Amino acid sequence: MTPHQLALILSSLYCKTVTHEELTSLVNYCRQISKSYLVSFRTSALQLLEFHGISLDDLALDVVADIFERNKEGKFTRFDKFFQHIQYSFESEEHVFVAFKRFVILVARTQLSKTISQADSTWAKIFRNLKLQITKHRDLSLEEDFRGFVVVPRQMPANNELQEFPIEELEQKLLSQVRTSHDIPEILYVLNDILCHQETYRRSFPLIDLVEIVRKLYMLPLNEPPEQIEIELSPEEIERIQHSIFSELDAKIFSDYMLKGKLNSEQATILSNTLREIMAEWWSGNGNNISIANITIRNFGISQDEYKNRYQNKIEYLVRLAKERVAHYLEKKI
Image 1 (cartoon, one colour):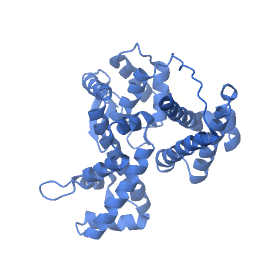
Image 2 (cartoon, one colour):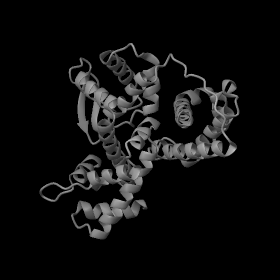
Image 3 (cartoon, one colour):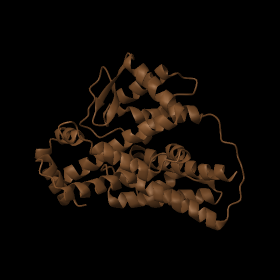
């Protein structure tokens, strides 16, 4: 769907003159967006859903049902909030196009959290504990906006006019400063310090993303290296794994970086190719000799400072996700 086509349908919805055909087109488009986002989500979440027999199609339909829910007066309450949030009447078609995709992805993220909390008692326990501790925390508070529950510093402006804090960057900063011996209140003090001592991103952060980070801390202790297990794979198996991994991560590059305006099309392609080159070296057994920084700097033609400021968190995060997916496949082979 083009920005102009979407703008026409949303205009009809805004003016309450939308037709059944237009609604059908919008439903299908929302389903495509939500499925694209869900495919690129974290491995642990997708494994859990697969274990409980919940397909991505099921989740995508739940997202659509949530978006198009009506109140007693027959109004689409989600869309009313969306139009208010972006000041719909004053925005360009291109801005509305991007904002609408973000809106659908945020609903998908919320729906995913509900589903995981029902299927994963550990996730649900962390969610409840974080929510309880934040409500009585000295430096942080819990608010609710179009993203759902968000964590916000009490003493500093949220700066919501800025771009969102990238989850991979906050994850790296947080996990580098805390250990499994830290309790939730201590982790929250570190989070507040990270949010307040930067001016680049919003200081509000979605609660469900924080749950994922904290869960990773407790499920994957940072100081314990994984047990080394040797498994022989055929060239066909390796090719199949690689194809699956890169398809998922390419979708993530699109939804997390291109869609949010962090990278243009050319930069996204270079990032994808860089990931493939790094993983090819890793597959060949040269993992200890790989320099992620050198490969990225060479491929992008950038300086060391630009790499650290703009690309380091992105590529290291993608490499880590790729290795997690490989580990998941090997676990099923054991």
